[in-house]
Length: 294
Image (cartoon, rainbow, N blue to C red; front, top):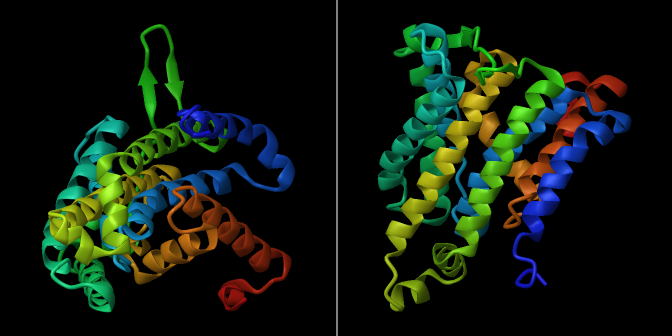
């Protein structure tokens, strides 16, 4: 069926994103919550390629999430750089470059050892952001004043300020992200990712450079994380320091597991469940910070 209708998933995704603002408010979803779900869903696309399709479980994606976010936020708040999209792309490139360097170290090990190395590296990034680089990152105060996108078309100016207007911009970013992710997993590279996940020894035996492909998946995940981190700053008008925390990486893993690993859309659905339960348990049941126990 998918071969006969190769763009079916893309079409359904586009329809879903268009219909969402008209349906979700009746289900109790506020626009800010929907925007946050899309940011987490975009973050999870790269992680699902790394974990779901390549079999590499990383607990350190917060390092790239924070790197991309703070690079973009710094450009927009401290340097006079005016292009929000340009800052997001630069932040994504910075996160991808960081992912490449970290991948050279972390991918020397596999399994639990790889996961523990990513945890350690993410913690290093967290402490560096809080102390040595606090003049650039704001330390525990973060970076406030991140602007929202504005596009001057000549005959009119488009402002994506907040709420459902900002949803249009974030939804477009997510749609582009899912298009690229689908193209990756359907390509020969995606097939090799699956082969590495299922049987790395056999993939090596048939001549594939599995270290190179693992590094590629790691960089792709870092790039997605960096772009999503930049969107977080735009969404909140503030880049928070907790983007670098282990809790951020843990939430990503939980959301992907809830929604379904190796599906690309799993992180999006997992984020919707996670954020809905957070709001419901905190407010309706009054559990406060204890909601995670449930």
